[in-house]
Length: 376
Image (cartoon, rainbow, N blue to C red; front, side, top):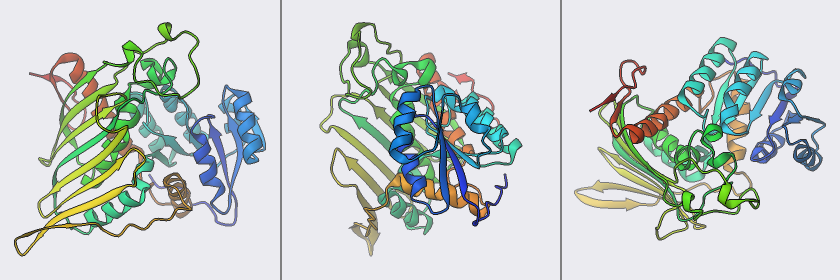
């Protein structure tokens, strides 16, 4: 697609869908010169109204259709995953560029609809993979692009929580609204980051397993979304641990693991390890500790470990950089840095992990990305 150039002299008019993590979108937009957040829409009108008062947003609407009628330039979508597709399709049809929270959709089928809608509308659809914009991630991508690691033939991507099931009994733990559990919530981030570093190769097969060892016992919960009136009756029909193995068309492989709850040593451990022909790298974030990046190479036959310098701008968050990149692409008329097509690849892998877990078989994603038949 070719994004339409937004004249710098005219303010970019943005609307917000949702009243949760949308706060980081609002803050990001308000740090970019020439951008106006003119409306916020969501069924929880009172919560939207409070956000509007806090951030000086002039319009509050219950129905996003009414917001789209305002003639916006762009929309941020941060609502339960099952509603990403219908809102995005409508926003694109209304002539808006769209920044959609991860995952792109609750299913690969819905993600496909969104990609097709973006192509038909000639508008930008970008996925909010904010982990790409962390200082360590940006530094690692520069090293990868410079060829420091050489071709990457394997990656290990993990996001593990010891006890962090969010919004228990609400949409996070209800499959019809979320599409899945830990993998589609936190695993999606580290999966995208690995694929981003590997150059987004085409997946050809996926094997996976999922487990629900904590949620059904009402264990491993985090205080997100407030108390549950009837904990025993609360819905939990998703996984709290998932693991997958992916093969790509170029021969590379990837292991991904994610958990909301697991018996492990740290409260939260986020690790991406890359194995390249000429070097390796390990990016980590554990609990409240600082993010780290280590690079492993050899020099004159000797093992060399280095810690690259990381530019740390504490005044700008990864969400701020993400929103600025979205706005910048709109204004420049260039493709978004995290295009919907990549979000679709992520969803095809996640869907395949779930199907493999259900069938106990490897899922074939070959045949031009259309076949997803289980194979023995």
